[in-house]
Length: 201
Image 1 (tube, rainbow, N blue to C red):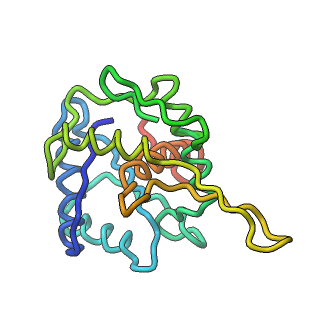
Image 2: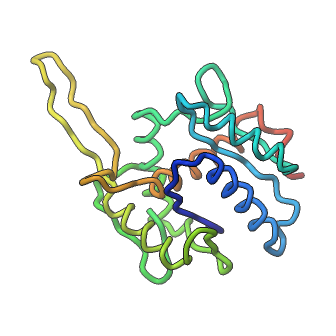
């Protein structure tokens, strides 16, 4: 993992500025100068993913692709409950010297990657908006909170509802979600033929 940030703002321009600064920061790292930027933007009703794409175009950022996994193949990524289940079941971070071990009842891709040590922090790990140590602490806290919340059916013929979240007591789970998105998006980018033209030779 090269970079992570937490941004609390009501000004969407601050979000756009952060994305552009993160891309510039990663490309300033040795060996990353010509890296293709793969944008995995959450698809929502505010069309924020389209606004971010327009912002990086205006900033003159080159060599990038935005995953088009939204409804009907539109730009963005739908974070449905089913997708969250698959994502968490693939992830848990190997943060320096103290790998996290969240409860076994959590999801699968992120969990598996963390279990075998496939996630670690780069030597040059950086944050734009706060000290890296602060970001790492927040990441650890969010991953430890993230869990499956099971609700019983409300009717006799209803189904048990599972919710994947770390937003207990008004707390946030943005870093936990973004780690899961990154793993799922990476697999999508390399396995879906429609992105083949963007792969490095």
